[in-house]
Amino acid sequence: MSETSPSQILVVNAGGQYCHLIARRVRELGVQAEICSPKDAADQIDQSRGIILSGGPSSVYLSDAPKFPLSLFDGTVPILGICYGHQVLAQTLGGAVRAGQTHEYGKAVIEIIGHDTILRGVPDRQTVWMSHGDEVVTVPPGFRVLARSESCGIAVMADLTKKFFGLQFHPEVTETPCGNNIIENFVFKICHCKKDWKVENLLERLKSQIRLQVGSRHVLFFVSGGVDSTVAFTLCSDALGPNRVTGVFVDTGFMRKGERQEIESTFAKRGWNNIRFEDAEQLFLDAVVEIADPEEKRKRIGETFLKVQRKVETDLCLATGAWMLGQGTIYPDTIESGFSDKSAVIKTHHNRVAAIEKMIEDGLILEPLRDFYKDEVRSIGREIGLPETIVAKNPFPGPGLAVRCLCSTEEFHAQTPNAVRDVARGFGLNAWGIPIRTVGVQGDHRSYSNLVILTGEADLPVYSEASRKITREVRGTNRITFLVSLASSEAVGNAKVQRKFITKDRLELLREADAISHKMLENEGLASDVWQFPVVLLPLALDHGETIALRPVSSSDAMTARHANLPLTFIQRLGRKLMKLHGVDMVLYDVTDKPPATIEWE
Image (cartoon, rainbow, N blue to C red):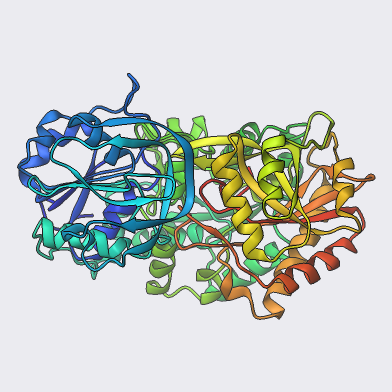
């Protein structure tokens, strides 16, 4: 989408989860930035004023790590290395990198011990966002240490002569308050860039790209009623005309309470007559019968959407080669699915199953929003005149409640891991390990670890700090919850994971718990404090019931998130209300940030 060439800042992608976010932050400063792979970087050095090396899931000392051209490091162009890029600078230029004794995921505090251009205007103590397992232990010749944290002795390093800078933390995420200041220092004070990036014509460029990619074909577009698919569908209808775009809403049976009725009403008010509704509840239930593995569940749901697509294609007599499949895919979907070179698979989104990837290769998929983040999509939605009821809607996963209804093929009892228990005791809490594994993202890698439940009375900051300490110090942990409602906290030790799969009854219980949670949040004026509020059903019982887990988070782009700091009194009242539902034995509250946990549990 660039209007100006060449780019002043070159972002070299090592497969990091936040690579596109770096380029976005530079463009927000009014400077053109482009992303390239390490192997293509050498050809673009001469056209750039500065280079940023992204984070990534690899270890620089391993043979299969991404390799960067040595010509990048000849000192002719300033370099900013972030996380993995920081370690690449050290390893390449004569320093040393090793696996850290303590992994850092989430919030950390750095102490600045040397100010210069990259840290100009940054306070001496600053909160930053970490996500790393390796660390630089020796700086290269010519470098000096500018900042450190409690667990990381070299949080910032610099060679001021060559204008090379390394940051172990991520300045591009919103959870690093001083991050934009640091990036701005690099772009303007170090690289001396000029503002050349304008976004006024973004909508027209998007529509032009749609027309160019589609050509004379028609578009079949699955819409869920959420912001992403609705914005993408509207853009395509505006660009091509409603006669060439057909929207399909699929009722999978995995929707929230009353959602189909709300969507039908919204579309009718907009006058969208190019949308058809498909009832496919039984088809989707059959697809996941006795399936517990999260990846397999997502795969089957994605393939079932394609079955519905083929049915609609037949019903509408769409000729092969005369149509494309439109999707509301946004950037976090693609990067978490491992769609970028060297990026790790965190979880395969339903719009990134193998059949969809083959269609992408064949030029049959249209994704006008694939380079954007959620907050950017909301802005585009407002520009094209969509109502706030859609634009501000809480994100909801494509597979719906199916990925919030956790399953198990076997029965297990709660455990008490010594390492977790010891850390929890330091906060006056007890801890229980539950053999229900959930997905996390740690050091740009996918993790898949057992759940931890904290018990004992504390305020929310204590639970939060205990969560951060456990996930940093105890390997194999990525998601920490605390017990909200139960007569006796010691009873958690008798909890049992039951053999359960997705059924209509389980979905109905989850649907009701979800509706109660969101309604109570709205009624108490707390909805604006929450970006997304997954409610999760676990096959964890004390008797013959199940457990509800609450996962409200604060975020702007889904790449990072913090658990929502809702009032503890509200959390407890909500817990008591949910305990009144037939079949609920316990209620938990998730106090894990992203990283180390993902927003969704699977």
